[in-house]
Length: 165
Ligand code: HEC
Ligand code: HEC
Image (cartoon, rainbow, N blue to C red; front, side, top):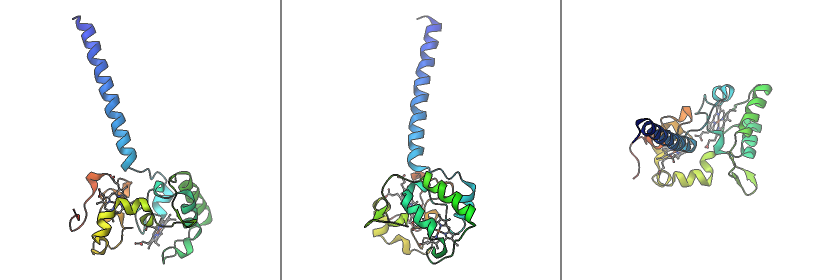
């Protein structure tokens, strides 16, 4: 075969392979790595717990969380009004599409949503949250070592004391 044509063919094959694996990578990242690209959010909402991925609650849930910061799960998480507005707008713009309401009221907890409970069914049944290193399922970083970066990929999961499986 003509060497130039052969080289071209090979180059085309590599281009297709690269495009396919790039697509696979982005699909994978899309499923497990969440964007946390808002400095105010990371700073103000990532000090007591990890900055939770906005995708894991629907917009009405984030609105309800942000309207109740003075009585935030037993804490006062009040913000300057301008900062609060910025964070609330960003959360709602990046919220998930999956409905996170129960009986017509927005849920405030990711950990109470059916999606979360299904995804963590084995750990919930095993009572893993009672282990002292975990304490609460809201403590995502206890098991997801990349949680502070929004990375919840399988390879970063280490359940303290071992998984229930
Ligand atoms: C002063 C500390 C503090 C700050 C600041 C704070 N939180 Fe929280 N947050 C808590 C506590 C405590 C809980 C309950 C944790 C638990 O149940 O283990 C909580 C829980 C949550 C939950 C529910 C977690 C679950 O169970 O799924 C959400 C959502 C949340 N916070 C959002 C925010 C947002 C948004 C901000 C920023 C505006 C913020 N938090 C700032 C203390 C704080
Ligand atoms: C007690 C340990 C533990 C805690 C705490 C925990 N997770 Fe998980 N999470 C797991 C395990 C284990 C899996 C894998 C589930 C399975 O395959 O059975 C998982 C799966 C996931 C997945 C799917 C990952 C994938 O690759 O499919 C996401 C997203 C996730 N968790 C988010 C969270 C968030 C957000 C929090 C905090 C609000 C949290 N998790 C708290 C242990 C935990």
